[in-house]
Length: 42
Image (cartoon, rainbow, N blue to C red; front, side, top):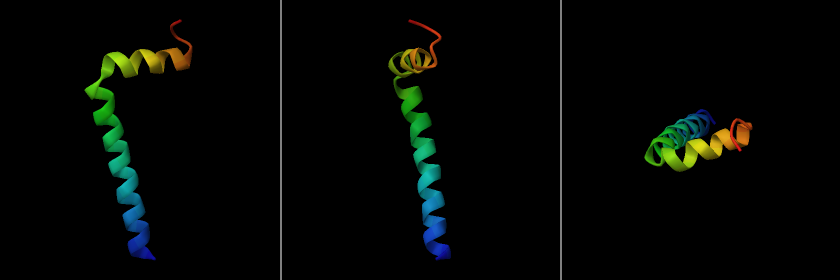
């Protein structure tokens, strides 16, 4: 069970890291979309 938990945590950390990479890969698409979702821009 401990190994499964560790694998789950590593997977989540990798997903977070991938998300950051993805954010910076294409910021001109992602950031305006994010701001629009927050209601900061039309």
